[in-house]
Length: 398
Image (tube, rainbow, N blue to C red; front, top):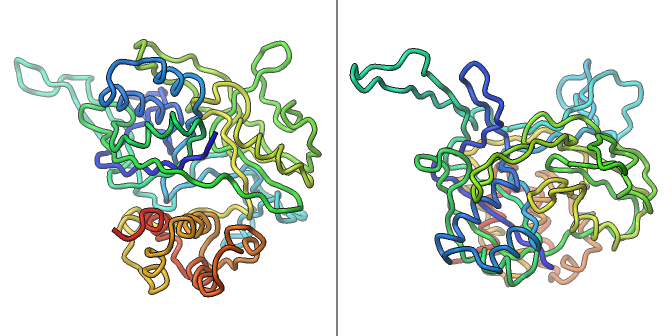
């Protein structure tokens, strides 16, 4: 089994409906669920390879997990974060998984997707037309929320190399609802190294998607800290257990029927493990939590720093015009070195130092000159440029 990075760039607006239409308005999810990605790739597969066969079923029903996709200007709010009531600015957020909140008064974040750009979503309004009068029909004005076009999304797939390798041959797909007029996107799927855990110390994990859990009686539960999955680990603390209000149901394209709605724990649930066995943590990241994991539910990631709200605008993210001599030179580095720096650009934030990287094998494999260049790039690349430069580094110089 191997890890693969997915990069999606939308050419049309994308609609990810929540199924919760009110007053003729349908809101959109702030991310692309793994189930939506899986459905889009399955449809693209059938166009390219023909009718489903045993390889298709093995890919989409058994051996491959499809993670959620987040826009480069968005992030899931960790539920370990306390938003302080009387401390605006830099001190407004305290991530209790890394920082001491003391006697701060406030409310924990709820796992919503937070956007760095408030204009990333738009509202599309349509109406039905009376065929005889050629005017709008009364009571038929509808609106829906949509992701604006020309945005980039990133996520991960985990599965058999031979199966995902065929997916990597796909170059485009239609994502979300109203596919006849919306949802066209370019897709790139490429191998990526597995998550690198620190050699020692505590490990913090969080979910990027809703988690569907069943108790011993087979009934849905919102219990988070006491999950059986965490047995064998020493749990320092955990933050989660909120009910996910959206992103659980959906539509099964093959059967033409709605998917069942499940009770699930909201994304952004966080657990802190005390000096866990690294191999067991990697197994947990590969397996995920709960049920319906192939659809992206219960998707876990390692967190290495306190959560802060994302910044940047889609336009800045797409242009990638802020180049430096270091970044330009890196485009000619060997693929393995470029992939390493690309991963670090997305892992760390603007202004960060590289102390957390300096014991890693990929860092030690760099020459001293390349380490110096990597330090400058990781520290100085603007936040709004980091994901687009990570993508360019993985592609190399064309």
